[in-house]
Length: 445
Image (cartoon, rainbow, N blue to C red):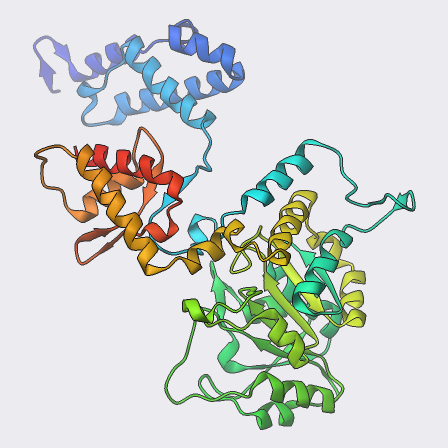
């Protein structure tokens, strides 16, 4: 047996195990005693027991066990850090310096301040969410956004569910369950996080009828597929997915004419929810009003994309069809809460006032190159005054990681291109710039 002097390794391990402090001993240590008063004591005890069990397992089985400290102060620090991490908020504000305005991983659209104010007011008080003040009786929560949506889109009626995928699901379930839905094969897209349009359609109980090919679908393909089982024609806008080259598809006007000739609704998943024409700013997305004016029966779109509001799925269209969707049992499971309604109502109000500067997404899209250059020059000037005279070299990847995991402030999300760190001020709020300067300067020290 291996020995060190007269003591065996096993004996040394046993001695180290005996030195591990008890739960009661640790709970008397200053930091843990204070934590037990500030947090749930059961949580502190649970974390302490788990940490001690892990420590014993490491001493008993780790080949580098001699380097493990079982000093009460060291163990207390380890446990305190674990408890503090549990108590800290996981969802954090970050500075988006990627230049990607609708960054799904960073929460998509930041809300307008007016929406945040309404959100806070509604959250902290009672409201007339489903109460008709004039009649003194129960009302419907749809009324708070329906008129705004119909004015902005030209639709006859509108309802709101919790996201656009939910809008697709409940619309197909209400209008096409048990029947066929005709859709172009080139529009069977994946919408993110592994969810695919065909799978959502399957959950609705509708039968998918694919027509055309990935790159070319003709009007005749839709017409030839129509039969007694057909319930709707579906058009899916691909948003950030595009097939180029040898492609073809019927216009929305052609599909409207075909659907009307056959007495079928044309339903469009528009996705992005663009309410105003942004083509002069390089965003060539169809607007909801264009689809409604073209004669589309039902349009679904997101609230937290180009619309710039909270996560929601808007369903707008013909009054009779919207009524059928609203009556469908699944609708209640997908309806939005008072906070979403408050934020959406406020955002839509900004559109009615043409107050574009109130909507961060629209403001960022409309920012001119000259404005961004001026901000960038001011930013560089401020940064130079904070930088050290000499600093160690740091790769772009390493610096990106430092900013992303910055320990003493807000995390900064940037991007790396050709071993250069790119900070795009388009998605950085002007009031965040001083903090970004300080964070970047600290990361470079």
